[in-house]
Each structure stands twice: as C-alpha cells, then as structure tokens.
Length: 171
Image (cartoon, rainbow, N blue to C red; front, side, top):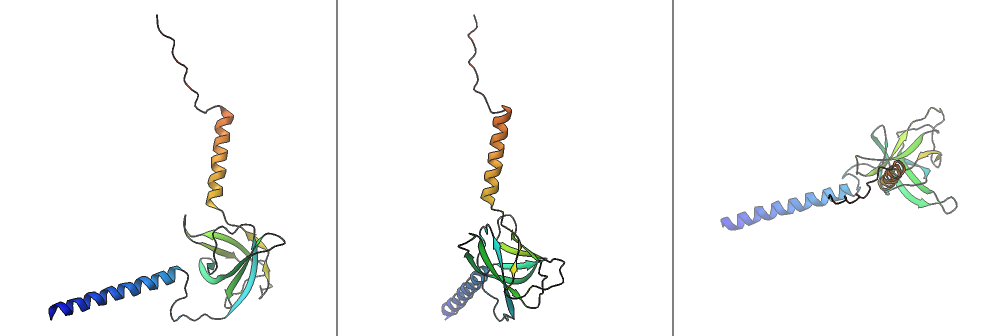
C-alpha cells in the first residue's frame, strides 16, 4: 500500500515537472502568455540593410518597455533590403519621425527592435513606413574588422615577430 502511494506522488511530481518545462519552452519560443489579451494593434514597416538574427515575433521595445512584436520579415526584391513589419500596440502612439534600430539583449542575447520617439507632432499611422533605421551590429563582422585592423597595424609597424638568426660559434 505504501509503495503505491509513493509511486503516485513521484509520478505526479514528474508530470508537474514536464508541464513546467513545456510551459517554459513555449514562453522561450515567443509564445504569448496564457490568458493574456492580445489587444488592438496597428502595423507599420521598416527597412533594414542587415537584420542579423532578428526573428518573427521578436519584441519591439521603446525605453525598455514592450510595445509590440515583429510580424513578418521579407526581402524586398527591388532594393534587396529586409522589410520588417511591426505590430504595435494601439495604446502607444509614436511620431511619424520615430527611429528604429535592431538591438541585442546582453552580449549574446536575443535581438529586438528598439524605437526612439521623434519630435514630430504628426502620429505614425497603420501602413506607414519608418524611414530612419539602423541595422543590426553582427558580432562576426565586428570581430572580422578588429582582426583585419590588428593585422594591418602589426604589418605596418614591423612589430611582427622576426625569426631569430643563429648565433655564430665561439672560437
């Protein structure tokens, strides 16, 4: 009798743990919160020359506050720019000269779009395009530039290590 009660509690504990892991995996993948209302949104677009690792459903933040989500990401066949649609919460109104940049949470964290309010009195409306954008800083490109400039500096000042000449034998 005691063994079956113990097995029941162990099984219940394992089931609750599996549910918790599933919930956390859903949230980490960008799922909406359970029971959270989606609210009304309006969609605007922004074009970037390089989006790095930005993904659909990534956060859109202003002053660190979540104000929307990335909708779709497409390549414009005429300009070869990444065209990103932003689904912004309708309670947040931005000026028509708002700027957007792709930022990274922490050193190697997820990428998101940061909005910076402009000074224009006219508001951004559904279907508008954000014209002032700043592309992602790709870590691999930065490392490549650093290594290239480091190699050029060493080659230019002659500080690269030279092979040692053998000593002449002493008489």
